[in-house]
Length: 311
Image (cartoon, rainbow, N blue to C red; front, side, top):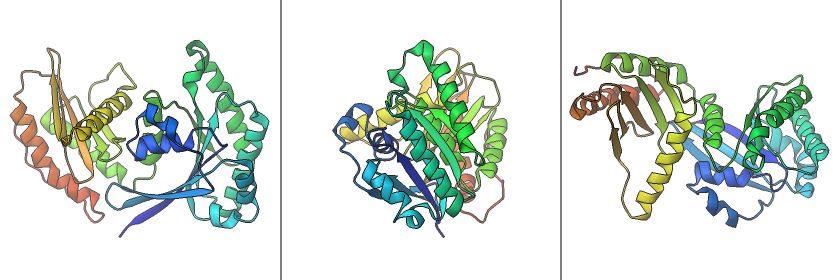
């Protein structure tokens, strides 16, 4: 049985909605998005995510004439049964008042038609802002948006298609939609302890978004997951251009060994071991042994954990 979640992607024309959608879901790299044209009216796409979760993505063109229609003749059709509203603001926009006006119109329509929807605001194109000003500009914008959104609550992220911030925002958004994410996290924790890993994380197979992770040792780089998502996705795309299929990867140095391997039919797993002397085969056998359990977790009627591991 498919679990469908309707996701509205909105924001003024040129704010970067279609570019980010194409990078996350359609395997574009940032520089290729320059050839994307403006979205006309609403573009629908269905993205299968983790087994039975399907994101029904509505990318809504942001030209004024379309925006006016969304709030007039199309209001019910667009804003009914929405699970998530993602509103994209171009940080360099010259028409901030108008942006905020449209955002508030969206919120009113959400309040009337989909009160339970989760709301995310992406302050986008942050790469265009001088690095020493980004924190303050984002903080000011976030304060404004949170105030304007009341009585609804919004979560804000700063994003750019040129770095890992885009992956962080979308990973967090999708994380909130996955039905059994707590069971996944619990099992990852058990798996990490049994095989004595520092860290284990799951990536969704097509998008390479991080959907769940468990950390047993604190790591100094808070953005490492998104950086890995970004790097591996680029690497996967390079492989496919050469007609090769990306399957697994092993990286080791004097401090650690890292393994990325195909896991379930919908995920890749990454395992970090701080004992670089540990033979690869032991970790790969453990990953293989855990597959069946995680496959079962992704099918909705399961809650068993009976895996045997090699030490």
